[in-house]
Image 1 (tube, rainbow, N blue to C red):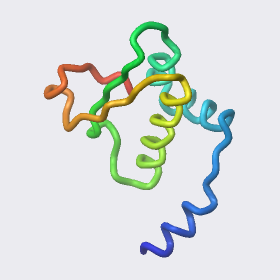
Image 2: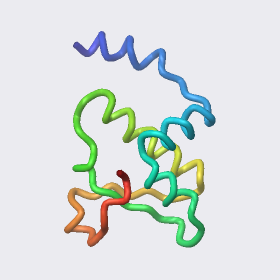
Image 3: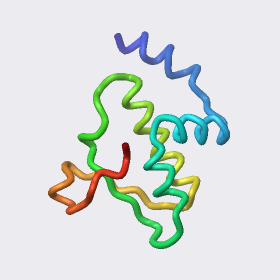
Image 4: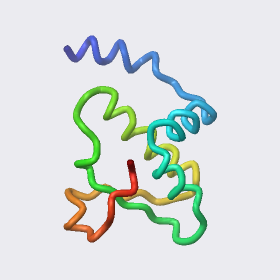
Length: 89
């Protein structure tokens, strides 16, 4: 299983344009939050993403897009703990 995952992930290199396209389509609210002016910090609950390869890839791309947008990202155990609303989806 680990070898299969390694082979899949080795071929995944995304350009900034590809990251933006995927985030725009899959995570429009996250993109909107990243593109908004104001405080440079975003937080979200890890629970909004599943454990499939697709969901973990979306998590990574969400973080990459936010960092590219100049935002700091904090991942919390749950929304209640951080007092945040889900902005990811």
